[in-house]
Length: 387
Image (cartoon, rainbow, N blue to C red; front, side, top):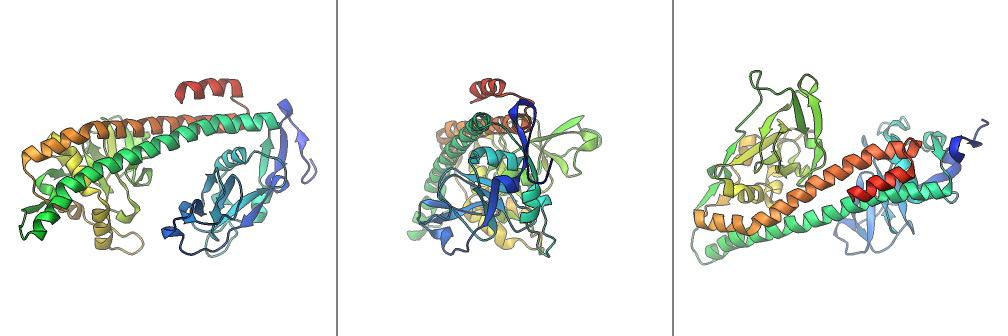
């Protein structure tokens, strides 16, 4: 094939290069997006970072990270702004933007390094990347099938955020605002710490009790209360940090870079967490929601971030998490709080489980659809059943 010229392949698909399909346009610097009330999302190299009143790209947009050790690929279904740490894709011809997004998810843009001191994406290397292009109808169908998964995943995440906020609002009303009210009246409610209610790191695997395989949760696989992914390993292949036994009702909080929000409430049996987490197990089963809310409140994560030290990898001791200050509440009040929030938390955990299942299925289908190994008709049946 001559440079830049597509040729026919099986099924009417053609081999091409990204430089024939689109250009990478530079984003533009912007201030004030973190506190803006604008309606247009703002994207940087690692995803959405705020909002702005104006848009730089005026339709569905693929964002490609430009600077940094990790440069992600992101998608905005609506007009958005892209800052100067990222590119945005500008099609040269009629290609489905969402199809282009899924193709780029399947290609490693972090390998496209310009060679500068700060890792950055090379536009020249991007334009030379090969891409197999289905016919227009099939491109739209691939985008529709994979998009159905992502739309359901995003809906689940919105539901999870709503449930999370509802539980935390109740916690604040019952155990934070009431304490401040009493303090304002010169009453001094008794205070303590989380280790009054939870045991720290109660179980770990050892040579005598280790399993044949583990379902592993790492720091990088949690994001602001969500377990994004569970990785399965045979014990001999598991990361050395796969040692922390966790059970339903436990709260895990990352001790490394706590400001990143690596924490989660455990909702199922059989998980192993990284030793980079502090595991808090409620001493009473009904205190699971109480411990979770107290340990992972925005105020406490900020407190831990302030305590963290260690330069490039700021960390806190697990004891700092166990010593999180809390108001001492009587058993009857804590039981009532548990009864009020248990249904919300159950739905929150179920939504997270479904999201992980859908994500795994989408990730399995994506390369097979893009290569033609799985045809649209079969994928549509799978998507209809799953979503």
